[in-house]
Image 1 (cartoon, rainbow, N blue to C red):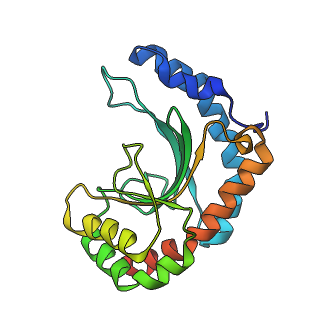
Image 2 (cartoon, rainbow, N blue to C red):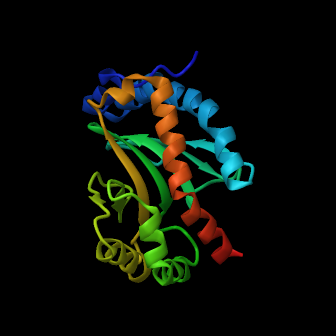
Length: 209
């Protein structure tokens, strides 16, 4: 099996009622595609990072009642997990695909990390296209374009000062975008996104040493 793109059926999985039924759809429709995407992305990511990268697919194991509103795969340089590390995500809500470099609230030393990012605010902003998105919460659909330094500064300040504050930067691709129907073009977009945000990732690795 090779990755041939996402279909409306993949996004429709999030309209299915009930935890068990929705999880079954995610496992059958989406997770096999994550595995195929990883085959096209993982080696490139290892070249870009200079580290061995490990695939983690969300299991949603803690859920006992409410079905997930999104699902994702993540890459980190640890076999044991990804939430406490800078990591790369690819996933779906019901209306878009997200491609993130993610620093979520479980990250140790996130105040120091955020302060370092703020110290390099202009450098980071120059490297990130204005069409890219930033988010403060990986569980929410909402995100905004990086229009100016002030937008990035606001997100990074919240990442530093709010316990649950997060920093995600990358791209959203609408569910009706033709690129999602072409596996090769989507893989190319993922690689391009990860290459664009890579300087931020490497900057954060320097801070964590």
